[in-house]
Image 1 (spheres, rainbow, N blue to C red):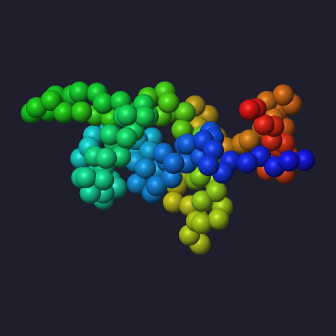
Image 2: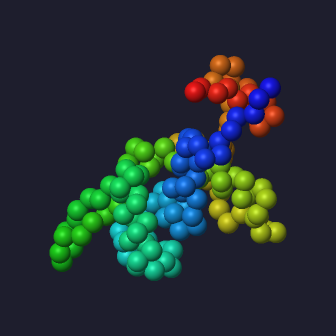
Length: 147
């Protein structure tokens, strides 16, 4: 069986990794999912420099992950809201959180839990087969080259 090569190839794992694979980017997404919308609120919640925040927000707007929405204060300013593309990143962040809870949490456990608003149940991330619904791990998957 031949191995799938991805070296020097643009693939659907390397492209998002290039976009999301920096600390501030993931923290910015976390804050957006927690409901942060305004520049000053992102800055104070993350303790990030204005220049870095400006750059990350612009990248997310350019990539269609966030959209700028005007609001009136004493002057017209902008909020940053998740787009459908941005909302689709939720399972990615939850998978990273689940891994972090298992392998990197402090001795007294994670700092927060997630619960379903409607029923109060715990929230989990699963990878499963779309045909039979069985949960799958890395050893249960066969990679099929498409091109």
